[in-house]
Image 1 (tube, helix red, strand yellow):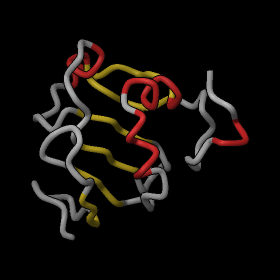
Image 2 (cartoon, one colour):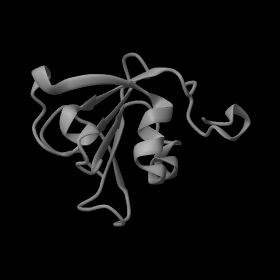
Image 3 (tube, one colour):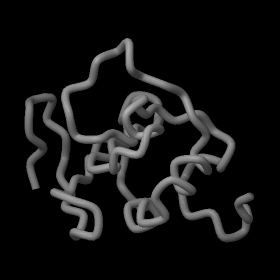
Image 4 (cartoon, helix red, strand yellow):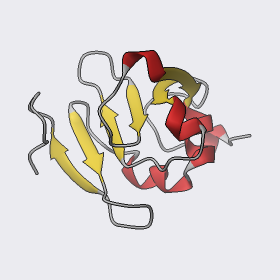
Length: 103
């Protein structure tokens, strides 16, 4: 359970977020997107997204899976954060709609 007073994201802890089945199966979250169009969040494994593998989870569930997501809670809408492996520092960039964000 998440304490709302300590919740760092701009969406409530029970808001829906997008992930993929691989993350729920234990794959690390290596890519985070804060969508500009709807303020939604995506917590992904860094691989190409197959829409058949997309799953809705709560924001709190994402943080339960990877508490380091709190480090990117201030990510602005339209921006993306990525890292090469768990424990590595998050990098940030403005998503330009191509394959790679620009930092």
